[in-house]
Image 1 (cartoon, rainbow, N blue to C red):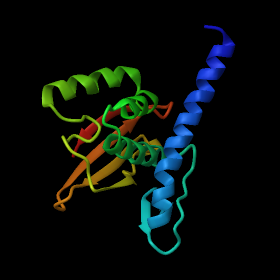
Image 2: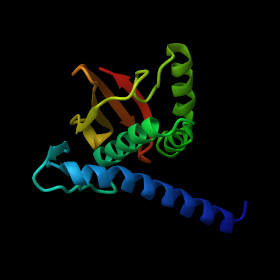
Image 3: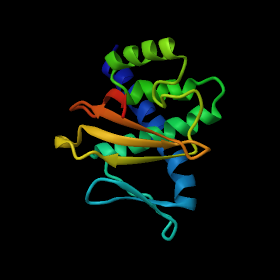
Length: 163
């Protein structure tokens, strides 16, 4: 593979991710505001209608992933977009483990369920280096699932555990 092909792949991947983030951020921006607080939580507010985040922040990265993944998972019957998001955000070694977990449990490994949550919250767990991020998925009946998402130094997901 030459460097020109690699550059095109990087640009294409960047464009896909930017489009996914925009697809998630636009609806959120119209209905709620998500702001990173000093403690690293993503808080919702209906007053301002804005979404903020930082490129280097793991809380923002996990919130972007879960927002785009849930949106894609619900809208795409083929699952192609969900698979592309997983390939981009999840470390390849863990992706194989995630697929094996799904085969054993007959459920989506990212959501740890067979259906799609009504809402989600992403929060810093306070772990050193922000390598573990808390995700709370809320289902239609108000039941919640709490997950801890682990990331490596390259900001790739390397673990999703239930609390």
